[in-house]
Each structure stands twice: as structure tokens, then as C-alpha cells.
Amino acid sequence: MDIVGLDSLVFGVDDIGACATFLTDFGLTATAEAGVFEALDGTAIRLHRRDDPALPPALPSGSMLRETVYAVSSAAVLEDIRAEISRDRVVSEGADGSIGFTDDAGFALRFRTDRRRPVTLPGERVNIPGQPPLRGVNELGVSPEADLTPRTLSHVVYFVPDFARAEAFYAERLGFRTVDRFTDVGPFMRPAGTTEHHTLFLIQTPPQMTGIEHFSFHMAGPTGLMQAGARLSARGYQTFWGPGRHNMGSNWFWYFNCPMGCHAEYDADMDQHDDQWVPREMPPGPESSQSFLMQLRQKWAPMGPRPAPRGEAGATAPAGAVA
Ligand SMILES: [Fe+2]
Image 1 (cartoon, rainbow, N blue to C red):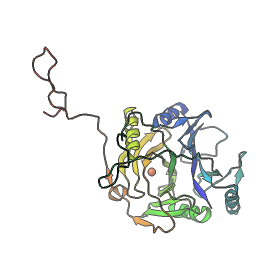
Image 2 (image 1 turned 180 degrees about the vertical axis):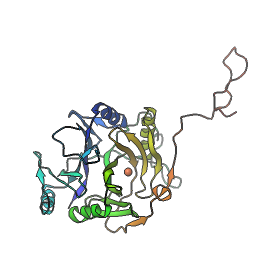
Image 3 (image 1 turned 135 degrees about the vertical axis):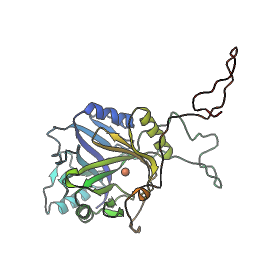
Image 4 (image 1 turned 45 degrees about the vertical axis):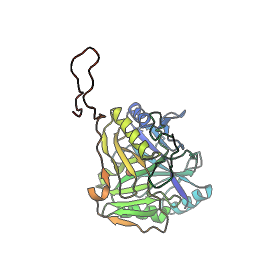
């Protein structure tokens, strides 16, 4: 089944205003369609009021994630999914031709033909000793005018009550591949139509926690991630984890607390895998969860004593300066 990636995530929230402010501060673009905030390729977060009758039922946990929407390569793939899933559960059809159903843990899923816009912008380029310059002479690596709009919706992470059952559903019924796993926690999975390290990560938790843990958007590269994270921090949002770089997937990460009852992640430079890859398994823990982890500090500069302004005696040094 050629499922090619995520299309959008649908949330039912109490405070649309706060969520809309967060998503625009995060860097997504508010569209002409109310409540829709998109990345450069049109993948999006969609906000509704919690009590909107158009939404699928909420999970018992009260998770604000109400639907996960995947893109498929063709209408024929939709028919394949419909034929497989309708063997044991109801498959609904949307007015737009999409199909919807619920997975074994209660997450509402929707599949639609791919409407993502191709993004052909260059990635970040770095200059490396021993290599010709990848970024041209007189081209700057850092610009305060850099476009920090996330490029595409990368992945979603679920808390599930039984990761083995959930993994079997996505593998056997929808053709997802397990790429790596944390022992007794859950797998990183990718649909067959993408080489991304993971589009879905499952974490086993007590049943009452079933819901979304975080979503993530790909940035253009590590510099864009750090600039976007620094900008969001300066806007007053609280870091949950990061910045750092994961082992599984190798992606740079920076997670923030988000008013949709989950975490929101920037990521960059994720590994790509095909069916030749042999899945790894690691015990969960700080060593396996990241290669390195950094901590944000306020900006400063190692400034020495400064000459006194003309006409004043003595020299002054700012707080924190190097003497
Ligand atoms: Fe993530």
C-alpha cells in the first residue's frame, strides 16, 4: 500500500485563539481556510472546537488529537485500503473521496490522495574542509531574514496501551515497516511509500494515557531548526526537550510545550531507509534517546573592557563580560 506520508493532524481544542497563536509563532502559515495552519508543502494542523460535531469521537483520555490524515499515491491505493480494512470494521467515505476508520487503539485515521505541494527549495549547505565549497563564495550561512517556515509535517507519536497490537495493525493491515525500536516501549514505523525513518512512533503507556505525545515538522536543516527554536523561546514558549540530536533517526530535535495538550517538535536531517535496512533495537533511556543534548542560554558576548565614552573617566564592562 503506497501510503506516502502525513497530510494533516486534526485537533479539537477549547482555546482556538491560543492554539492559533502558538501555531503561527511556531512558523506555520494561517491559510484562507479558518483553523488551518500549513507548512510549505501544504501539510497542516487543523483546529476545530472540541465540541464540533463534524469531528470523530474523542479518545477517553481527552486527547485533543481527533484525527490523523495520511496521503496515498492514488485512488487505487484508497480502494486497496478500503478493501482490507472493511473486512472487520466500518470504513466511512468523506465528501472529498477520502476514507476514514478507527485503529485498534481508538485513533481516528483518514486516508486521501496526495495533495502535498512539491517543495523544490535548496537545503542548508555547509562548507567542509577537503571539499569544494558547498555554499558559494560570498554566500552567507546565517541570515536574520531566513525563512523559518517548517517544510513539511514529519511524524506523529502516539501513546498506546499495547504497542505490539498497534504495531501489528499498522504492519499487517496498512503495510507500515518497523525501522527501529526501543525495547518494551515501541517501534518507529514508516509507511511503505516513504523512506523517512519514521512517520509514526508508538510508546506504550497505561490505557488511560492513550493519545498524542507529540507531532513534528521538518525544517530546512539544523541551522533553521536552531533559529526557529531560538525564536520560539524568545517569544516566551517553554522548551520540553532539546535542542539535541536523536540516535534513532539521527534527526536534530527541539520540543516545546504546546497548548494542544501535547508537545510540538522541530526536526531536521532525518535518516532515510528502505526495505534493505535491518531494524535496530535499543533499551530506552537517556543514552539511547539522544546523541547529545544542549541547553538554551540567553544571548551574550565575551566582551572585554570597553573604552569610556569621550569625556568620561575610566572604562566599563557589561555584566558577564570577560575581563
Ligand atoms: Fe519526534
